[in-house]
Length: 121
Image (cartoon, rainbow, N blue to C red; front, top):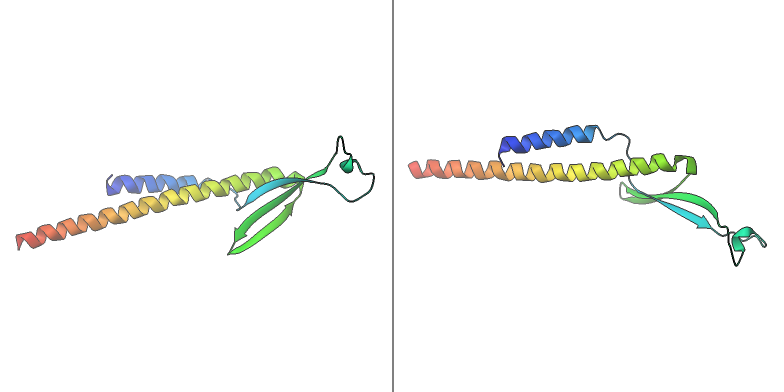
């Protein structure tokens, strides 16, 4: 791949990153709980009706692990933001890979040019 082709791919990735929309790290989990109240439907031995769903978002930000309760009415939006964040990470990794490839290509080209100049001397 040429330097120009790499730069075109990088520019496409940048446009895709810009279009992602709201994002946040983490994964959303859904939980159902059993309470401690005697006679509650959640303790029925044959057909327990657990309480919930309750949503928790777990993530790491600035080196700190965090868990946050998310109300059910926000769960779909938070899930969408989490998917956007995963896409952001994928695209940035692709960008970094291309930047490394471009840098290596530039160094190889420069070394080849210098070697050719040294042979002429």
